[in-house]
Length: 122
Image (tube, rainbow, N blue to C red):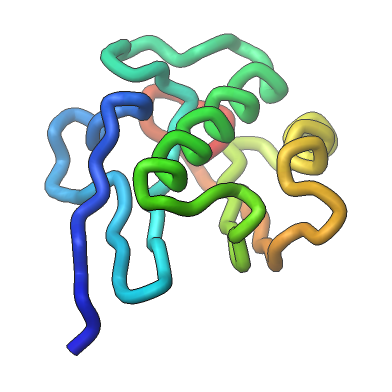
């Protein structure tokens, strides 16, 4: 069986409302990161009201979790983006492109009925 380790960092929000999941799991050479909301560590209010502000915070959280696992954004192979409104795609995509570099990971982007705390993106 592959070695499995829970990844935890204070530089990203703890599981939402104490839900039973980990920020990430490292399994062998792979890191599986849970969905990230635009919450700053230790806070309960979303970071900003625009899709750009929220996407920036999501990437800050993602980076922190990956770094805690000994990885980074440059190692991403697949992402899934949930948007509360697909009309926010251009704003999310602009921020996304700045963070993933010239060799972006595979990606799926879907509109969902709602996200926790009224978030625009996860």
